Image (cartoon, rainbow, N blue to C red; front, side, top):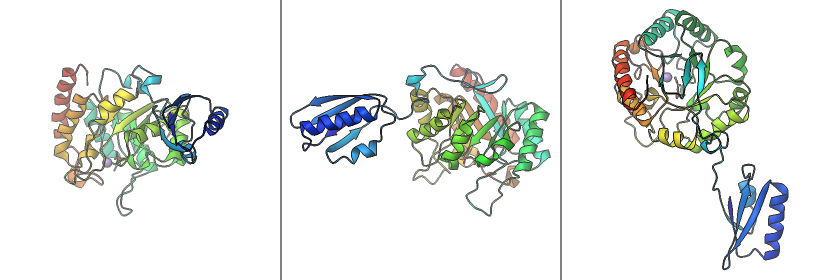
Length: 339
Ligand code: PEP
Ligand code: MN
């Protein structure tokens, strides 16, 4: 961290301020004296430093961070790619690109088992499906909740597919344990810090979705919450962000994939369904994700999209999922991966 002092700071004040910094934080202060301006270069563990408190000092002109605020999620502290095992033999972050597929919402026992069988037959390795649905409107279908979770578990037992499902409330964690293999934290809850702190106390994998109005740094700071709590099984998911464009539901920030892979060691999954908002765009966006280096995809597939209780417009039909998978497999091979 660099602190630029104002010209008003006397030598006496700079000494006093430097002593205060070293006494309070585990840092070393190296002053650089220029003509009129003094710059303090802080070395050491600057993560705990309260930038706002420093900025309030009347003799401080500017504070510049030179280190990213995320530590555990940072590739600098963990140069190798990390992998997250969702179930025995199903690891996100390795050579194999993991496809998670299923309906937006669990609607009935028949539906979820049938969809699970279908996506499994096409090569999906994980079943997705929402039981608690955080909908934009209170009048929309809110999910089957506890019953939905039970049905997902049944579908998992029937097919052998592990389950990823959204958790919206820390009070539900106990209930989810044993019924899901990976918690999904949705875009709307990316900064639900109390939820993140509680999920951080478990070792169960978490698929953390990027909030639609959050920067990559904020996204990684949410991953940091999980990791700081002791859960390093974090999978990042880019699902599109809000931009001025209205033609798509969200804008898939494809550049987030190489950026995240570069600055973090955590595996990165792309959700082309929620980015697109419309079925015909899912396939090209999924291809883009594979080409950009994603470690996995989470795709909505429905038995009858026209009558889906949520996100029918963006859900793939069985037929379209069947056409999509071989195409993605071929592309994965072209970039040195399997799928
Ligand atoms: C979902 O996966 O169905 C969902 C609600 O996703 P997001 O949180 O990305 O909107
Ligand atoms: Mn959905």
